[in-house]
Length: 531
Image (cartoon, rainbow, N blue to C red; front, side, top):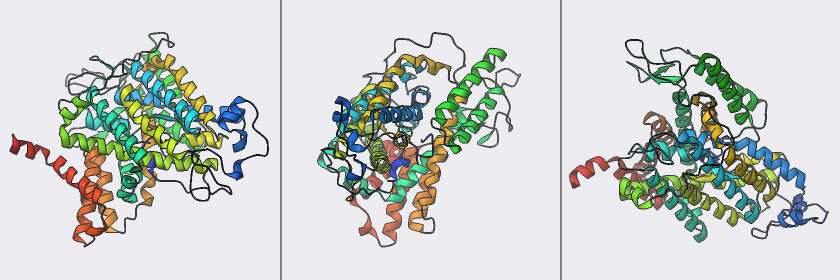
């Protein structure tokens, strides 16, 4: 669920998260757009005839742009979203499956391989979006979606990373079929808007908590569930790196600096390398009763340079999919809930992002149509399939693309530029091993903040809205499960509507999903009765 993550205020909500579900207000052009033909609204066209192969192919002059503006916009988009090459491995590459194996194989994390796969799939999909849909929208592994897979799916008994990616693949196939049959809108309309927003806010809190906890800014404690730092106060140089990176990220974001997230991660990483080189802090180990351990060490990667940063990429994550194994491990009901949860996030993320980018680029006509909208949705649906096959989690459209649009991008050429730069990044994937949690996880806190800002769209004066939204939001971080939060919200929404005599106002699909969640919550007792 995606999240979710703009690096400048031109990007209103996180990229790869359900926070993108909220469609931006459509900008109305004075002309009409041919949905498949790609003719832009007349208000964006210029009187100059297309010149050159790139211009003719992408319709650059028709949309009032230029090759240089498209290239510049593509680079801005890339630098606004390439943090995903660092964050995705730290989320899905550091969690073992139920058998103790990490993504890419092995008993130890293989972060360079996850980074290379992340960059490869993002690059290929962005190029397809640019050349086929010809729309200034880039794709990459979705934040929120990857957290859901890593923390809610992979730990299930018997689940492997191959099985989890197999379920991602199945979700992508279903989404693609729903797009091609036109059923996607029906599913999208079934879930009330306030629940979509509550899901985004809840995931935001969940991701923010992950960022704070993984950086050891908060830790488990004796007598209370969590505490500040390792002993109720902030100590240690790694914590200093985290706080510095977080403050810098917010300062740059407030100052509207493009690439604020990436700049902050790079700065904090360099700071961490300098500190480790000078102080030899080593890896974190909890303090013991005899004073042993290393509570002042780095939470994950020790930021030291041990190999040349430019290498032939390792694509060990590719084609590690096992749909049958995933269904077997989760069970028919569990697999259905997982696939549906992923499906919901993909639905809401893409539609809101597509409208937001099109509005910013002036590519929405007076009827609300967007050029090649069907192709855009198809490519995004293929993103989930490609993410599963690539072993890097579902890929989705990134709202950071609006930063490139703000820089002047209007056509698919900018997406091609993003794709090419991602492909070049595959050769730099070993650099991810330099980035400690303390340098990268401030971005998760930023994601949480951006996703949580949508809470103002929820009417807490209406009990039919407030109670389901509240349960959805708080149970994701408190139960440490995105699924639990969604299920509680869906069930409570249906229950309250029924007891208030509004059963006919609930979409039949909501009854089905609520019933599935009831079975999901009671699956332990049901299994004990059946076995």
